[in-house]
Image (cartoon, rainbow, N blue to C red; front, side, top):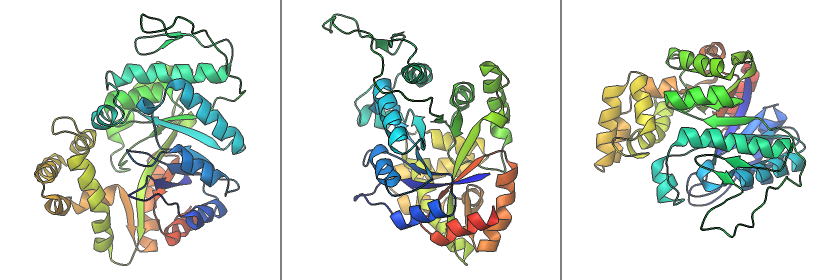
Length: 340
């Protein structure tokens, strides 16, 4: 199991802890992952990081597909890959209806079909076997129709690149199965090493559809986990809970919250519904307090260094291949590096 570092996305001001990122690079961490929601983008920080590091891979976790055409994503990925000396990993995700329609002004539509077409187009561009043409339900390249000039023609990328590994952020069973089928890696959210049965058969079904002997042996599961070093375990868990409450309660509508549905599949249905009710009614502090300690402890690594080292065993045994640490503590990075 190799290590990654998550730098997430910005708050009100954009900043990167470059000493922490450079420490991860020095410790031999495999990758550093940036994100985007509706503030900072995922790409610009990676260019900044690549220029100030030596060997660590730079990875988008994630770039939102509705925000970019497949061609733009392919161009950006190859540009970053070549400027970084072949260190880029492409993480993609469909985001959710609130962001897709409310921020990007794009139809949410049918994300599974859109994702399949998106990856096909990106890889066609990278392969450069012929000028790009695609006729699908979601993308038509070159574009034809009454709203066009009719002058579009198939083009081949000027830039010669490689097939960069593609990861997909997926939560629901159908999207995870699709990820196992068509992607090189999976970016799970709130991965629990104690509940691998939730996804085992789903991943196997996706691998079977892919054919060619695809399996976990050739597939990277890059799971993010909050890591907080501290002597007071409860105080550490309390720092994990606000994010859990936000996603369980506020990242989605009452009947369409992928994160809430995941908590239900993990067996925390009653708590998930309570947290959502409290959060949506404006009682955010109460929603945070309602997050069970057990859930926070399952999806995070917190406490004294020796406790974190002990609790790494289930993560090692769960099948994940990259543990992406969400931490702002150099001590946490060193604890993980020493343990592994």
